[in-house]
Image (cartoon, rainbow, N blue to C red; front, side):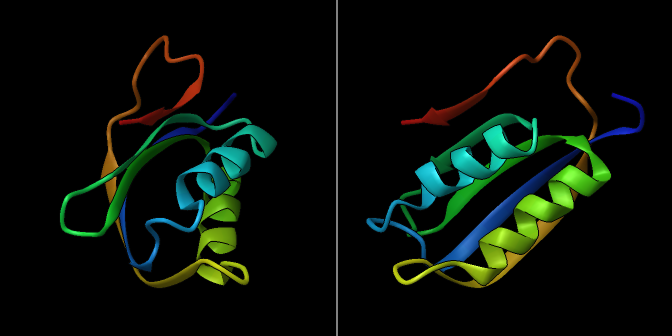
Length: 93
């Protein structure tokens, strides 16, 4: 993968109790993204996604679009340094 980027994001809205973490993981698998996703005690969901820029943006676009259950009102994104050797995408508890 050339041009690997890593982004931290915090999603707010209807994102807990609606399968959002599994939705994010599905986007990661479909787009060859590594990283993690985790529910936070304040009702938000945080994540780090790593892949090429197009794949990460495709995942964020799908998150913003949501579905019948998921409604992302805000998705704050920050740059992070890529992590060497990361091989998969996990749901943290």
